[in-house]
Length: 84
Image (cartoon, rainbow, N blue to C red; front, side, top):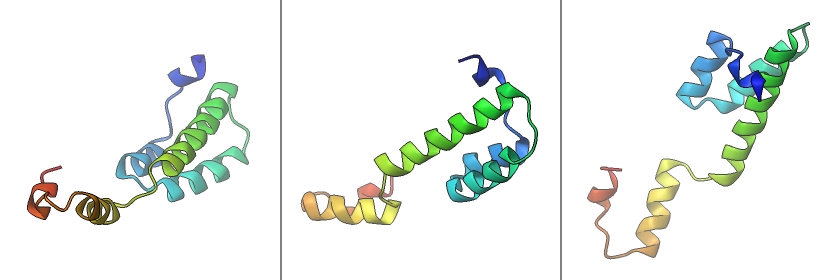
């Protein structure tokens, strides 16, 4: 897992931080078309996989999650959900 020592390009890192995974994945795909050091290439592939897993495992937007919780837990006031 030495590839984790390779820093992500700043623009890609920023999109990941902002949660713009689709844009970050597109940027990674473009970057992977050029010649890159092996560690950076492995890091970019890892980040793509990591983001895809997050998107699969956490499919709900904040609003959708609140609606689902409200439906499941009718006793929970919606105002408390804004805290989380």
